[in-house]
Image: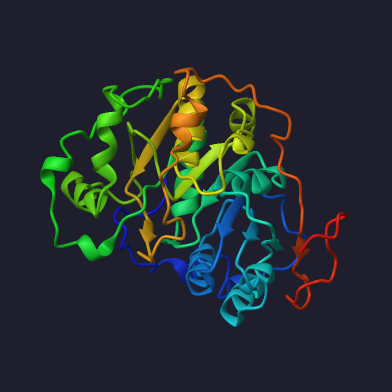
Length: 337
């Protein structure tokens, strides 16, 4: 168990990490234990902050893959983004920035990233989330100890620190013993846990629990948004996001559908304290009329059979140059941009 409680924990131990500067590492970088997968579109500033949070993490070794669907491919050229990518690479953390167009919706974007993952664990991290130092190690430790399908750090909106909602925290229930598979659907007892992740509820809850240095608590969730560490094989066994061809481009809830499948077979948990801070940027998915849960799990089952085309092909990929962070001219074989 690592890191101190609270989303606002300070990094007063950061300077002790492997010498005076993380970029001073030398030798062969270890194989990544985690692939950090970041879908992005139109958020170069927020993405830079997200990458800065990753640069402040220590163990476990990780790789970063960014899939950019911005209209102008800003993630490949924005100075703040490329600067943070250089920092991560100098630390020995591989970074790939890919332009992935045309857009086919968030589920396809996530499948595209999952198809590029090779590590045993994958962290799906939204492009507007800052992680406090030690958060990745906390998640990695929890997933290993709990042995479930995923653990998540629900994002906290710190503009709500003065908005205390104790009535929404009454559903908090720590896991006692092993994390067990659960079937979550609208109307089930587990679904009623969703208000727990509103506003800054977890920040207030962490203060109430008065956790000691290095302690964390696993608790029962309806789902976790924004920062979820999964066992890659568990996610793949449950179909990943291969259901994307069944959804229109504009949809929401694809992460919930995938998590519910994993929870039903392997179990899932939230981790408190949550060191994931939401930057509270405007949503890039304003139209949410189609809920992926209603389409993917319409029959009430957790079946994973998908139609042909469930794998996301790399149409329109442009690789960021590892040396100079400039867009490469290479495109996918079909030549689409």
